[in-house]
Length: 79
Image (cartoon, rainbow, N blue to C red; front, side):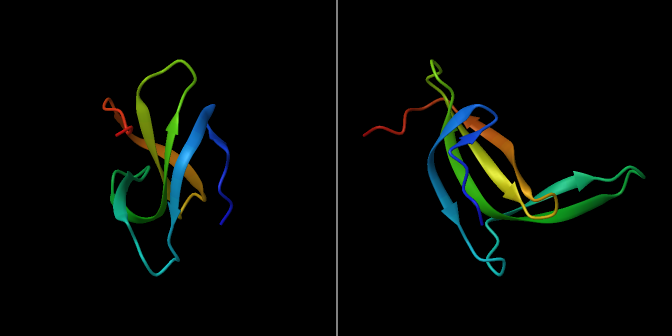
């Protein structure tokens, strides 16, 4: 799986990749007919936009073959 240096203009700081047999989470998509489908997440990336002190988690959605922003964090990852 290709790991990008940027996602939506944010710089990727950390990432994890699992094979397709290990799912980190399920994302629920709403279909056009109103039904829902559970889709496995197989990779995560933590990214940050320039001049933004928040961190963003992107999940790789196997079904659509690309990363989507999942949540943003307001706490620093620095220790």
